Image 1: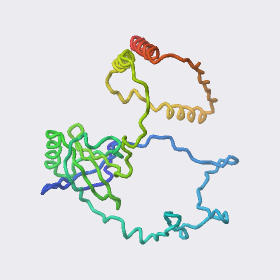
Image 2: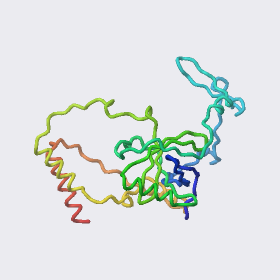
Image 3: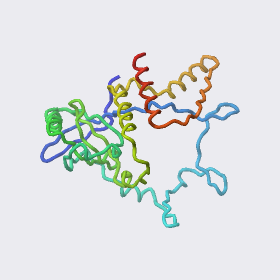
Length: 261
Protein backbone atom coordinates (compact mmCIF):
# COMPACT_ATOMS: atom_id res chain seq x y z
CA UNK A 1 0.00 0.00 0.00
CA UNK A 2 1.38 3.40 -1.01
CA UNK A 3 1.97 5.79 1.88
CA UNK A 4 -0.25 8.88 1.94
CA UNK A 5 1.03 12.35 2.79
CA UNK A 6 -0.49 13.75 5.98
CA UNK A 7 0.65 17.37 5.57
CA UNK A 8 2.49 19.69 3.17
CA UNK A 9 4.93 22.46 4.01
CA UNK A 10 7.76 24.63 2.71
CA UNK A 11 11.24 24.39 4.21
CA UNK A 12 12.92 27.80 4.14
CA UNK A 13 16.57 28.56 4.87
CA UNK A 14 18.13 31.70 3.50
CA UNK A 15 16.58 32.42 0.09
CA UNK A 16 15.97 28.72 -0.65
CA UNK A 17 12.49 27.15 -0.55
CA UNK A 18 11.97 23.39 -0.50
CA UNK A 19 8.35 22.17 -0.85
CA UNK A 20 7.88 18.89 1.04
CA UNK A 21 5.24 16.35 2.00
CA UNK A 22 5.11 14.75 5.46
CA UNK A 23 4.66 10.97 5.72
CA UNK A 24 4.33 9.12 9.04
CA UNK A 25 7.43 7.01 9.75
CA UNK A 26 5.76 4.95 12.48
CA UNK A 27 2.39 3.21 12.78
CA UNK A 28 0.38 2.30 15.86
CA UNK A 29 0.07 -1.50 15.84
CA UNK A 30 -1.12 -1.91 19.42
CA UNK A 31 -4.18 -4.04 20.11
CA UNK A 32 -7.10 -1.76 21.02
CA UNK A 33 -9.99 -3.22 23.02
CA UNK A 34 -13.65 -2.16 23.21
CA UNK A 35 -15.15 -1.87 26.69
CA UNK A 36 -18.31 -3.99 26.96
CA UNK A 37 -21.04 -4.50 29.54
CA UNK A 38 -20.61 -7.91 31.17
CA UNK A 39 -24.34 -8.76 31.00
CA UNK A 40 -25.10 -8.27 27.30
CA UNK A 41 -21.72 -7.25 25.74
CA UNK A 42 -23.14 -3.88 24.69
CA UNK A 43 -20.38 -1.28 24.05
CA UNK A 44 -19.97 1.09 26.98
CA UNK A 45 -20.03 4.84 26.33
CA UNK A 46 -17.93 7.31 28.28
CA UNK A 47 -19.71 10.33 29.73
CA UNK A 48 -18.65 13.40 31.69
CA UNK A 49 -20.34 13.24 35.08
CA UNK A 50 -20.74 15.83 37.82
CA UNK A 51 -19.22 14.10 40.88
CA UNK A 52 -21.55 16.03 43.22
CA UNK A 53 -24.81 14.98 41.57
CA UNK A 54 -23.72 11.87 39.66
CA UNK A 55 -25.57 13.20 36.59
CA UNK A 56 -24.08 13.43 33.05
CA UNK A 57 -22.97 16.94 31.96
CA UNK A 58 -23.75 18.03 28.34
CA UNK A 59 -20.68 19.02 26.29
CA UNK A 60 -21.91 22.62 25.88
CA UNK A 61 -21.87 23.04 29.67
CA UNK A 62 -18.23 21.94 30.09
CA UNK A 63 -15.49 24.54 30.70
CA UNK A 64 -11.71 24.19 30.91
CA UNK A 65 -9.90 25.20 34.06
CA UNK A 66 -6.31 25.28 35.30
CA UNK A 67 -5.48 24.60 38.94
CA UNK A 68 -2.60 26.74 40.19
CA UNK A 69 -1.71 28.06 43.67
CA UNK A 70 -4.84 26.43 45.07
CA UNK A 71 -7.19 28.32 42.73
CA UNK A 72 -8.93 27.29 39.52
CA UNK A 73 -8.60 29.71 36.61
CA UNK A 74 -11.47 29.21 34.13
CA UNK A 75 -10.57 29.55 30.43
CA UNK A 76 -13.13 30.10 27.68
CA UNK A 77 -12.87 28.22 24.36
CA UNK A 78 -12.67 31.49 22.40
CA UNK A 79 -9.81 32.68 24.62
CA UNK A 80 -7.80 29.53 23.98
CA UNK A 81 -8.61 29.70 20.26
CA UNK A 82 -7.37 33.31 20.09
CA UNK A 83 -3.88 32.43 21.37
CA UNK A 84 -3.30 29.40 19.12
CA UNK A 85 -0.45 29.91 16.61
CA UNK A 86 -1.50 31.08 13.17
CA UNK A 87 -1.77 28.45 10.48
CA UNK A 88 1.27 28.41 8.20
CA UNK A 89 3.02 26.16 5.69
CA UNK A 90 6.50 27.52 6.37
CA UNK A 91 9.14 25.39 8.09
CA UNK A 92 11.91 27.68 9.31
CA UNK A 93 15.41 26.26 9.69
CA UNK A 94 16.83 28.26 12.61
CA UNK A 95 20.34 26.76 12.44
CA UNK A 96 22.37 23.70 11.49
CA UNK A 97 24.03 21.75 14.28
CA UNK A 98 26.22 18.71 14.90
CA UNK A 99 24.09 15.52 15.07
CA UNK A 100 25.31 14.61 18.56
CA UNK A 101 23.91 17.83 20.05
CA UNK A 102 20.31 16.64 19.70
CA UNK A 103 20.24 13.59 21.97
CA UNK A 104 17.69 10.78 21.76
CA UNK A 105 15.64 11.81 24.80
CA UNK A 106 14.62 14.92 22.83
CA UNK A 107 13.08 12.81 20.03
CA UNK A 108 9.29 12.56 19.89
CA UNK A 109 7.84 11.38 16.55
CA UNK A 110 9.58 10.74 13.18
CA UNK A 111 8.30 11.71 9.73
CA UNK A 112 9.66 11.03 6.27
CA UNK A 113 9.75 14.08 4.02
CA UNK A 114 9.21 13.67 0.30
CA UNK A 115 9.54 16.31 -2.43
CA UNK A 116 6.33 18.10 -3.36
CA UNK A 117 6.61 18.82 -7.07
CA UNK A 118 9.99 20.14 -8.28
CA UNK A 119 12.66 18.07 -6.53
CA UNK A 120 16.00 19.77 -7.35
CA UNK A 121 16.05 21.91 -4.20
CA UNK A 122 14.94 18.91 -2.12
CA UNK A 123 17.87 16.72 -3.18
CA UNK A 124 20.28 19.66 -3.01
CA UNK A 125 19.36 20.11 0.68
CA UNK A 126 19.61 16.36 1.33
CA UNK A 127 23.06 16.20 -0.28
CA UNK A 128 24.23 19.27 1.64
CA UNK A 129 23.17 17.78 4.99
CA UNK A 130 24.79 14.48 4.10
CA UNK A 131 28.12 15.94 2.97
CA UNK A 132 28.43 18.39 5.89
CA UNK A 133 27.15 15.83 8.45
CA UNK A 134 24.75 18.35 9.96
CA UNK A 135 21.17 18.38 11.22
CA UNK A 136 18.79 21.29 10.87
CA UNK A 137 16.94 22.66 13.90
CA UNK A 138 13.48 23.58 12.60
CA UNK A 139 10.26 25.16 13.85
CA UNK A 140 6.86 25.28 12.21
CA UNK A 141 3.09 25.25 12.82
CA UNK A 142 1.08 22.23 11.73
CA UNK A 143 -2.68 22.18 12.25
CA UNK A 144 -2.55 25.10 14.67
CA UNK A 145 0.10 23.51 16.87
CA UNK A 146 3.67 24.76 17.11
CA UNK A 147 6.48 22.22 16.65
CA UNK A 148 10.24 22.11 16.83
CA UNK A 149 12.16 19.36 15.08
CA UNK A 150 15.44 17.90 13.84
CA UNK A 151 15.83 17.79 10.05
CA UNK A 152 18.16 14.99 9.04
CA UNK A 153 19.01 12.65 6.15
CA UNK A 154 18.08 8.95 6.10
CA UNK A 155 19.15 6.84 3.09
CA UNK A 156 19.40 9.93 0.89
CA UNK A 157 15.95 11.22 1.88
CA UNK A 158 14.98 14.00 4.28
CA UNK A 159 13.48 13.10 7.63
CA UNK A 160 11.97 15.30 10.34
CA UNK A 161 11.82 14.19 13.98
CA UNK A 162 9.63 16.33 16.20
CA UNK A 163 11.36 17.25 19.44
CA UNK A 164 10.21 17.71 23.00
CA UNK A 165 10.67 21.12 24.59
CA UNK A 166 13.36 21.78 27.18
CA UNK A 167 10.98 21.60 30.17
CA UNK A 168 9.93 18.08 29.16
CA UNK A 169 13.46 16.63 29.05
CA UNK A 170 15.18 15.43 32.23
CA UNK A 171 18.96 15.73 32.14
CA UNK A 172 21.01 12.85 33.56
CA UNK A 173 22.70 15.30 35.97
CA UNK A 174 19.36 15.55 37.85
CA UNK A 175 19.41 11.86 38.76
CA UNK A 176 20.80 10.68 42.11
CA UNK A 177 24.25 9.17 41.68
CA UNK A 178 24.21 5.44 42.56
CA UNK A 179 26.82 4.20 45.02
CA UNK A 180 28.86 1.08 44.41
CA UNK A 181 32.09 -0.57 45.38
CA UNK A 182 35.14 -0.47 43.13
CA UNK A 183 34.95 -3.22 40.51
CA UNK A 184 37.70 -5.81 40.23
CA UNK A 185 39.59 -6.08 36.92
CA UNK A 186 38.34 -9.63 36.40
CA UNK A 187 34.72 -8.43 36.69
CA UNK A 188 35.33 -5.69 34.12
CA UNK A 189 37.01 -8.15 31.72
CA UNK A 190 34.14 -10.62 32.05
CA UNK A 191 31.59 -7.86 31.43
CA UNK A 192 33.53 -6.88 28.27
CA UNK A 193 33.49 -10.54 27.14
CA UNK A 194 29.71 -10.61 27.62
CA UNK A 195 29.32 -7.48 25.47
CA UNK A 196 31.52 -8.96 22.72
CA UNK A 197 29.59 -12.26 22.88
CA UNK A 198 26.36 -10.38 22.12
CA UNK A 199 27.81 -8.35 19.24
CA UNK A 200 25.94 -8.60 15.95
CA UNK A 201 23.90 -6.76 13.35
CA UNK A 202 20.68 -5.01 14.32
CA UNK A 203 17.76 -6.84 12.72
CA UNK A 204 14.51 -5.26 13.94
CA UNK A 205 12.46 -8.03 12.27
CA UNK A 206 13.90 -10.54 14.73
CA UNK A 207 12.38 -8.66 17.69
CA UNK A 208 8.65 -9.31 17.64
CA UNK A 209 5.95 -7.85 19.89
CA UNK A 210 5.35 -11.15 21.67
CA UNK A 211 2.46 -9.81 23.76
CA UNK A 212 0.58 -8.64 20.64
CA UNK A 213 1.18 -12.01 18.97
CA UNK A 214 -0.22 -13.85 22.01
CA UNK A 215 -3.24 -11.53 22.20
CA UNK A 216 -4.05 -12.01 18.49
CA UNK A 217 -3.63 -15.79 18.84
CA UNK A 218 -6.04 -15.71 21.79
CA UNK A 219 -8.57 -13.64 19.80
CA UNK A 220 -8.37 -15.94 16.75
CA UNK A 221 -8.69 -19.06 18.92
CA UNK A 222 -11.79 -17.76 20.71
CA UNK A 223 -13.29 -16.40 17.45
CA UNK A 224 -13.30 -19.90 15.92
CA UNK A 225 -14.74 -21.43 19.08
CA UNK A 226 -11.51 -22.96 20.32
CA UNK A 227 -10.36 -23.24 23.91
CA UNK A 228 -7.17 -21.31 24.69
CA UNK A 229 -4.35 -23.06 26.52
CA UNK A 230 -2.10 -21.18 28.88
CA UNK A 231 1.36 -22.31 29.92
CA UNK A 232 2.27 -21.82 33.53
CA UNK A 233 5.40 -19.70 33.96
CA UNK A 234 8.38 -21.59 35.32
CA UNK A 235 9.51 -20.59 38.76
CA UNK A 236 13.18 -19.84 39.12
CA UNK A 237 15.03 -20.57 42.31
CA UNK A 238 16.89 -17.59 43.69
CA UNK A 239 20.63 -18.16 43.78
CA UNK A 240 23.26 -16.14 45.56
CA UNK A 241 26.28 -16.03 43.26
CA UNK A 242 29.12 -13.61 42.78
CA UNK A 243 29.16 -11.09 39.95
CA UNK A 244 32.12 -12.89 38.36
CA UNK A 245 30.32 -16.25 38.35
CA UNK A 246 27.16 -14.65 36.97
CA UNK A 247 29.13 -13.08 34.10
CA UNK A 248 30.91 -16.37 33.36
CA UNK A 249 27.60 -18.23 33.18
CA UNK A 250 26.12 -15.57 30.90
CA UNK A 251 29.06 -15.72 28.47
CA UNK A 252 28.93 -19.54 28.42
CA UNK A 253 25.18 -19.59 27.81
CA UNK A 254 25.37 -17.10 24.92
CA UNK A 255 28.19 -19.04 23.25
CA UNK A 256 26.17 -22.28 23.51
CA UNK A 257 23.09 -20.59 22.04
CA UNK A 258 25.14 -19.19 19.16
CA UNK A 259 26.46 -22.71 18.35
CA UNK A 260 22.91 -24.12 18.25
CA UNK A 261 21.68 -21.25 16.03
